[in-house]
Length: 404
Image (cartoon, rainbow, N blue to C red):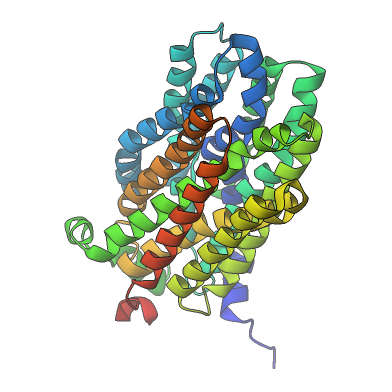
């Protein structure tokens, strides 16, 4: 008698095509390419246009503003029209923005405008889209599948700093933005072929139609606790990731050496997303979240007290937390509130997440401009991680339907 395949393995074997499309799409989308490349562009843009670090990294605030405006509408479109259509409309818009960035002539307002447009036109390339695609196709292996999907941005974090710094050194910063545009194009054929209609069985059809109503979710303490926790931790981790290269250069490393250390973030993100994705299918996810945020705080303390000698380990731990965060966010929204309005509910929290992503680098940049060093910014990062840990520990058990 043939041995029956484990249900979780069966899900992964059956859904590998959409999983591959979602993973590559996440890794080459707006949130990955814009965020993980910005630190490499700081020094070249300072030299080219005379902008300060605070001014350059404040561009993420405008991305956040664009995403706040676009994410709820995006979530509604996803729930109505599906991931494939939305992504295939968004990819060309994002590529056009990257080309526009390569043609800038020095106006700071134009730079900010392009980052705003990257979020609005490119919002269909973010994890909001691809997490929904995975959550709707996986149940028992949902945590691991989300972890694999969100390892795509981890790969970007691993490869982009070193690769782009080398290309910018050999050519210029304009060539760097053109390379990002070429990377964004890679996802289009995979999305077109891999994100076709879902083949529903009785279980998946019931799961897709069940879940908390939008208004009830927006009125719940759990929803806003999730939002606050992820905003705080996103601000902490993004401040570290974006400022790590200039921070290490201040400590005496040249750009290629600093970029190599920064690339360790990608290793942490990939490990975090895969390990945490596997773990939250087995252990209560908020406890896992609290532990991960505490580990990230330890990484920051290592950097405070150990300096450049501890930078690779500190970077690895911060990347681990940033990697786990996106995975946990999608998983917790799906388990607490179901899939019926997942696109909208996750979109709103993801917009808040990007408030943290944008605010963290700007905060650290302006603290550097004010004090001439990163000492206070590093302690603020530790405090934000502690807030995230406490909020995660305050979350209740999952609803009975989610546990079943």
